[in-house]
Length: 353
Image (tube, rainbow, N blue to C red; front, side):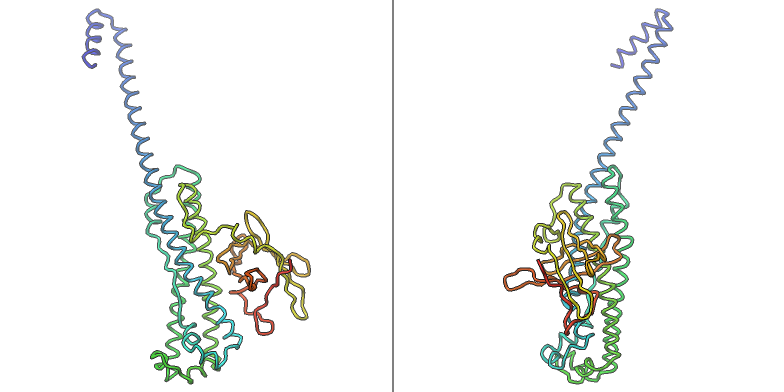
């Protein structure tokens, strides 16, 4: 090919056809430039394709990391729900000597124990270092991830640490003030420790603070972290056509029976009513004397619990579902942010339709 072009140039110069030669030379230069530009564009396409492929790989790894963090969050949530009734009884002075004797270690140990989420973010950090923007949908997901790992994770980390500190402080207090604490550590029942847990108001103050920080703060941020992580996880799976882990996702069709109207009549107070409805998104509407007080979004958490929140996540709580012997829903109890009681029990909204 090069020999062919050289022959043309020699023939044009030999026949003194300078202007034709000039046109030919310019045309040859244009062809060379076009060839270079095409090669550069092909190289850019290849680099962009490699960047997209790498970003997809990084996002898949982040999805797996999110799934792990969601599971770690649920360990903390389950622990809080499991012990919520004990805090309710203890702080409302419903625990008795017989309760402690029947399960001494459970009733003494629940304020001393704690769980941490310890969210991991190694894959997210790799994504940020290697992310290549090529889709508005993925840009939105990455923006949400930055919010999750830059804000919610920090709050969860801080309250993880606070819960550890509080548990250690309470243990130190018991070690200093209860001579028979060593019996508890040796799996022996101690009447001295039972009497202390039942009657010492400063101990009750410690437990109240653990409840406040653990349930009202730690659980609050863990729920937010989990909900936002779950949304990001589902969005990544949808964007990349990945199979979702059914153990951490929830299908609203499985919770149809929870929709309905629930009513609570407090002694010498207003009639309170809750309505749960919605197809694509479940919502809870709370009424007092038929006046709408607040509307919340409902996220099914398990067969027995829902997470409820407002639009901006400034209000986040949980409610428990109650069933009859035939597994039909008969009521709901608002838990984890309220120690209210009626006749020694948490108020239950009874189903009326």
